[in-house]
Image 1 (cartoon, protein in one colour):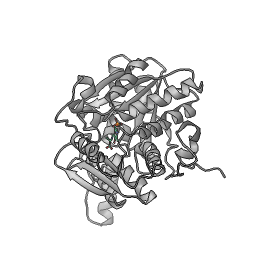
Image 2 (cartoon, rainbow, N blue to C red; image 1 turned 90 degrees about the vertical axis):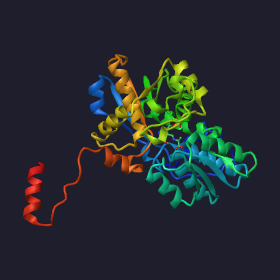
Image 3 (cartoon, helix red, strand yellow; image 1 turned 180 degrees about the vertical axis):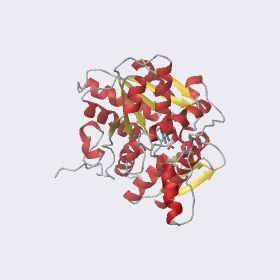
Image 4 (cartoon, protein in one colour; image 1 turned 90 degrees about the horizontal axis):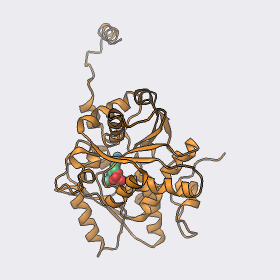
Length: 352
Ligand code: F0G
């Protein structure tokens, strides 16, 4: 039986792996591409979800983290450090735990979804919560790493983007071609840059004959790329992308411009309704992920989607990461009644 052995094995020829690179894996990658009947009908195209919430720690970060931590080990590093809105820290903590090295994590206090914080803690990370935002946390991490014996595993570490390219490879492998368009949430701007690198790598090796338009979506209150300037106090309900000074801004804009795509923002209300729409098809993604679908709907409403395009919306993280947002956003609440058969039967009849 041939089973999936993770990205370092699965895409060995496409990644900077040497004989000395440890074969680190939590069986990340190989996530499903799920056809969306409802979105396809609504926008008149073929729309798929790349459901990254099914990675081992529940987000796309595992793709880059497995390589970043493996290379850190190869280079003799004894610890890893990152700033995070939650998912990077969960992933760093998991791969560090797997490798038996410590992880240091700096997060914005009060703005990390509970599931993500729970992951970092249970994996044994050493967590510093600052009264400040992600951008400040990243600045502190960068500066501290200049004098501490640690490897930074934020997406400024080039191995993160190398590893994250594999999602683009998987999409092309699954479709036997590149999609016409990729819709993706943008926070620190690493992932859109990694996908573009991946699509170009496959194209240049003639595995595909075209390149997708890269369409990135920021949250309105954190739309530094759209506005062309840093946002000192970013705000959005989608805490994962509550970032005002994206580290890979330049690469992201290059991806958008080279591909003939777009960079735009979506409002928190648009994110919330896309979040519910995705769940209404049985797929649970976290709020930031829904920015990709909110963005697609905005493009459609602006008449920008052609008939029968193949479009992939990246769902970057699992909805279970942030149960509070799901409960608050849902229109329904559980009906609480006594454990009495007559009452239960009557209530169930009314619910049908
Ligand atoms: N979606 C989710 C669920 C994320 O966690 C992030 C980033 C993004 C989208 C945006 O990706 O930064 O590459 O543009 N999360 C980082 C973190 C910042 O710390 O977990 P990006």
